[in-house]
View 1 (cartoon, rainbow, N blue to C red):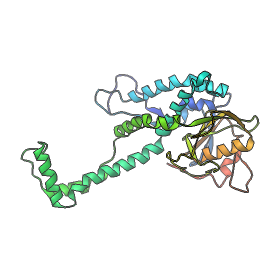
View 2 (spheres, rainbow, N blue to C red; view 1 turned 45 degrees about the horizontal axis):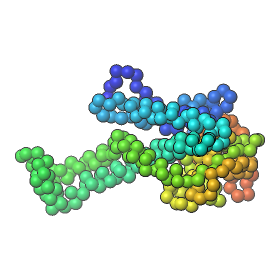
View 3 (spheres, rainbow, N blue to C red; view 1 turned 90 degrees about the vertical axis):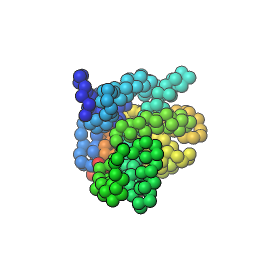
View 4 (cartoon, helix red, strand yellow; view 1 turned 30 degrees about the vertical axis):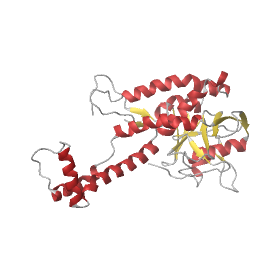
Length: 324
């Protein structure tokens, strides 16, 4: 790993502390439930939704935490706008804070362990298939060697032993995988491409009714949902492509967003049932952990069941072990 003459940040948040601060109690702590470890906990945002070296770069002359620091700077720029949306339940005069919200949603949708693991798996399979392809038969291998020689890329006097190279590849192909640098580059490119997807939507601001228990969030807070469906307990919901899907995004315990392809950018208040429905879908998107200001939130359970409460969530048989 590259050395640095200064202290290097190693604990990298994939859900920013700035965002998680909207789901804390008066002492600045989130109440959390870990669906894998089957335990409740309380933690300040600093201690959750983070992974060691998640943004690590390995390149000569580049500090290993350079991207982490750039992302922290971006989050600092977005923070005032996010805070105003929370406090006012609006995008401000002429929608000036809307862009900050869209940037945050895009960032959280693209850069998370679930998406990265999926993409690394896909690209690793592609790299391995490309590497193995010339060894399907000797004619393919000979064609590759001749093309490399013609391009001046085959080492002079290096033998082109088909069987020897084939055995080497077969013995070592399991070691081939997509490097994190490649994943980081793909994520940064995706940010610009996916911003339009979220920006094109009409964002309805949702306010939790007083006494409803408020909204929850998770370690994967951007959720895709079909209108009228709950998705409770689902590990994956519809992808980003369907135009008839909603994007749900909790902003704080009191404010949330629903992005649709039609309608108005208005503000509505959700009653207890509406908040519980929203929470059920958000919880279904969690990778491992659910966060809230306290354990008094509600969520909709399967048909015929009464609303669930955060304080008894661990006793709910529908709380499934998720990823990791």
